[in-house]
Length: 118
View 1 (cartoon, helix red, strand yellow):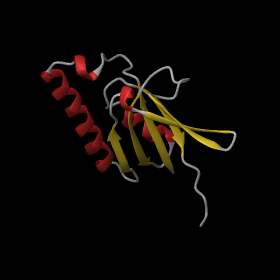
View 2 (cartoon, helix red, strand yellow):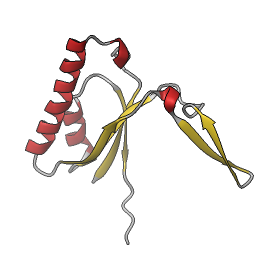
View 3 (spheres, one colour):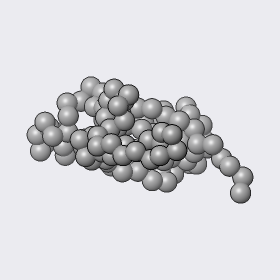
View 4 (cartoon, one colour):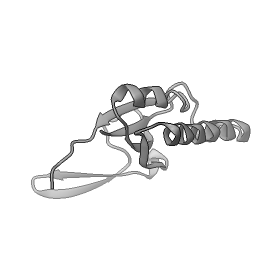
């Protein structure tokens, strides 16, 4: 099954820009360890993932009255900024959660992907 993992806010972390170089290197090591743990696990594959830019650089698109409106900044109702994402194939949620423990302590949202037959 495919899952979308959203890395929300900073969880127990301070903002990335406030990290020292050593702290950033340690965090990057945890991302690399997650990649390696997924590669070593039967039936698990990272299909995609990226770190995202600062929420201040975000553009939100909304459709209202049939018109597309663009707004600078993140989605207004979002309490925390979206820091990054992974798209992961895993046998089940339990396996994925076990692997996600390797990452830095972000708040995360995990959603199953709906498989649409083509």
